[in-house]
Image (cartoon, rainbow, N blue to C red; front, side):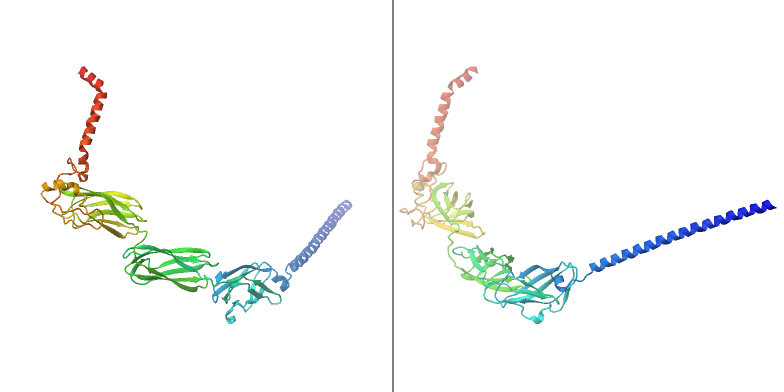
Length: 475
């Protein structure tokens, strides 16, 4: 009994010891946890205080003058580039804010100039206050009017900022009354009736600024013209533009060119002018002109055959040249007319015509062609061909007189009159007959040609005689 009591007491004492040890460890853990929480709270409070201090420093408000110093004029434009005196225009100024806060502005205006001014201050939309935010731009567009005299002026653009100084910026504006220049730069010396000629109206802009929407309208009567109107979008300063027209006069008259243009793009100030072109009728000094010469006359198959040259003595080309004969001659085939083609200046070409006629005293030779504009032009020369036919007179007695007789009158151009008339054209003396004079053609050379051929054959036979004899012996 006594031992049992002692054992129980020992067990009870050991349990109490474990309980006390557990309580000490628990208390130490709780204390350590509280210390950590207190340290964290102190650190967080310190960080919050630092952050608040930083934010407060970063949001410090600048003074109005400091904020205004971050704004500058980033661009300026003036339209028109060069004013005529009394014209309207537009000045555009752009401001840029490189700062960190809004900047207020009011009362934008043009100052210090009597030559460039805002015509009506009550229409100025920039008297009320507006704000220019950080990193943004803002434009002021002001309508102005120029005044004489000519010159270069520097009106000030001014805009104020409440609580700070104003922005004042000088702007260069040019005023000039120099007009544009118009001239007829291309025209013929004379205009031919019903013939088309090319004309150039040249407009030169000697001003610094360009002009726009240029319209040229020809007006008048007694002529045809193309185009009826011509347009160019712009003519820059110091440059010129040609306006081509094709004019066909039907009578002596004047062409009036009405010229309209604008100065400026945003505000188009209209201007106008006129140029008058007299259509003086006459013979053009540069037009193609033909001359027929070096004529020769023969008889072929019962018809006269006339050969010769046609030359372009003009400055311009003659296109599609055709040569023919007129009354009293009657054209017959194979050469009732002769197409020469194109003749450049000082160029010539041969032609051949066949015809019948009872009178050789006045045979008209007509040349028809087209100029570079497609106009049909012509020239007629009349020739007395009796002298060319004098070589045929000896054989005309036996011809039967089917070509008739002539009067012996002198022609207006070329040749000379031969005494007496003709009883008809001879049938001998043709191109393939022997004998004859100037009018005999190639026939007068046949004996010489045949003799030359016989001589050449004899020479060849003599040179090749051994070879020919050898061939004969082998056979």
